[in-house]
Amino acid sequence: MKKVISGLKKKFGKTITGTIEFRGEHTLLVEKEKTKELLKHCRDELGFDYLLDVSSVDYLGSEPRFEMVYELCRLAAGEHLRIKCALEEDEPMDTASDLWATANWHEREIYDMMGIKFDGHPDLTRILMWEGYPYFPLRKDFPLAGKPSEMPDVAFTETAPLAGGPFVTSPTTQSSVHREPRSQEV
Amino acid sequence: MADTDNQQASVAYDSKIEGNVIFTRLDATINWMRKNSLWPMPMGLACCAIELMATGASRFDISRFGAEVMRFSPRQADVMIVAGTVTYKMSLAVKRVWDQMPEPKWCIAMGACASSGGMYRSYAVLQGIDHLIPVDVYVSGCPPRPEALLEGLMRLQEKVDEEESAVALLKNPDVRAEEQQEVEA
Ligand code: SF4
Image 1 (spheres, rainbow over the protein chains, first blue to last red):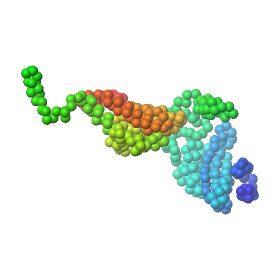
Image 2 (cartoon, each protein chain N blue to C red; image 1 turned 90 degrees about the vertical axis):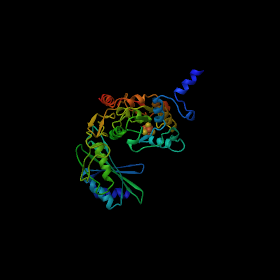
Image 3 (spheres, each protein chain N blue to C red; image 1 turned 45 degrees about the vertical axis):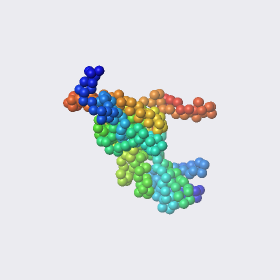
Image 4 (spheres, chains in turn orange, green; image 1 turned 30 degrees about the vertical axis):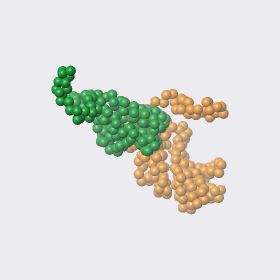
């Protein structure tokens, strides 16, 4: 893996803005413009034949707001490589569905949940929520309880009663009584 | 003594069919027939549906209560068993299936999700199927064991047993339609 990373660094130079190694996991931070090219290079030249997952992160309050995460895998060697790139709000990302067909539905899910658009995607429609649902529910500024909405004859939503906040466990070294899920203000 | 003999003669008592005739109330008869052949509409939406299947299978055997005829057409079903998480995306479909079931019909909300949204206090899940359709019996549990569902079914049978079905049946259809409209409004 070390060779792969240094090779990529040499080829893409400054567009790779950082590398992270944590417990044998390798992550590359790449500039948005070069991401597609780098993914293609990984697939065609380096033999990363399997796209495990595509996901996105919302860093609400910091700039740029979003981050795309690609998890690549070399099946024969069992090696993983994570590629991340930062993304401004309202900035579209290039689709990876022409490189790995599996990216098609992953990207639809990201669009559905985060509202990130993908240039060149063959069918960028919602995958979990219904067409016409007005929000992107996994964004950090969307409340867990949801918001009311109405699509006549398709679906509606209401606000869920949270009774004082979501029930979450607190990390503690004390007994399980302290750890157990309790309501916490959001 | 002579009087009694005369009386018996006047109702033309036939000893040949003695024992085969039962006098009862119409309500009791109709309810007895209904409650012992409740055909369920298995609305299996999530994990609870697995327990619903177990309830229908040999070990728990829902046919002991006359409810083994799972109908996948709502037009042939009497009781809708909502087993699982009702997402908003699914909820209007559930309502639509319910609307297609002929009267009289009943509904069992099986499990925490169908009863109240369960652990899904979230943007995606309807907080109880009773927001959309009237529920007769709620079965608690996540998931309820098959025994619990059977208990729920028995409670529903008790409920059916107390209904005034004859009155409802014999009522003038126009009056019934009016009442129905009032309920819907
Ligand atoms: S009540 Fe529990 S078992 Fe039943 S559908 Fe909900 S989460 Fe699944």
